[in-house]
Image (tube, rainbow, N blue to C red; front, side):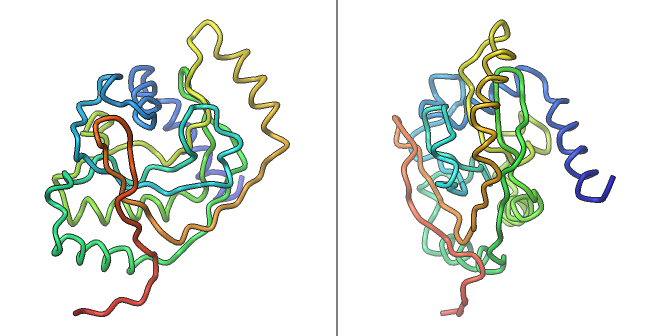
Length: 210
């Protein structure tokens, strides 16, 4: 087994180790109504995501394809000019990268695509939490957080998920692999009903101190 295969196997093992409650919570997070599923979001809460429009035709979960970089971030009221300055500089310090989606994974009740490699995404998360340590990934529910993932479906229960996701995976597999060029990260804000775009930060962009 080569190094990349070993890394993928380790990531899959970590994903399987999540409890059913954690896994379902992770899937619920990325939906359009987190407050209704128990996440204590309030209007003005923010998060960072990577949009993956190439995968939109495959997603059955009722929201656009994306990979979460950090949820939650700061309340919108705290993102002032100084924070914007720091964010622009932070993201400019990371090169653009490419994610490949070619394999599926599952949590209880959840089918997801594994965005590979994980390292560029987790590097962004680590830099953000190093600068803003109060922004604890997933509010600390999952310890250090979850591995990057792209939720495809989260609508099946224990009695139906195996057969349903086997069939869905077989249907979608011919569309893989997909590649996504990641050149920016989006800051989104919860308005009380849905997540909406607030800003986009370019990766590897020339940065000049004003």
